[in-house]
Image (cartoon, rainbow, N blue to C red; front, side):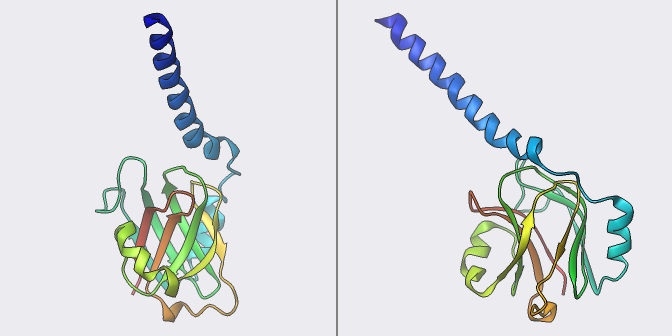
Length: 156
């Protein structure tokens, strides 16, 4: 009986570790290549706003972070840098500063989702034609699947 219980506990732990590892690694393994850095630099030149992201920002932890530069043009959002890998990342324009998931929840209804992030070494997202970047002041990368803050930058 003790042996059966020990078997269930050890195999249950191994299963949980494997499942958690799969959630973390699957987005990395299935991610398309990031846009070429020269293309990102070219797109960023047209930026109206730009903000630096740091890995050690207050809302970040070891699994949820972003670093680099976010550039906002009237047509695109350009990220030159890196994001912690994860599932179901979305980019939002938010009408107020966000430094943690608790800050975003009250603003989500007045924010606009502009696109999905599929690569973790920089991205380029086209803004919908009817989006006015002046109506917002923050770009947020959000994990929709887990309701987790990844990174954000207040650009004005």
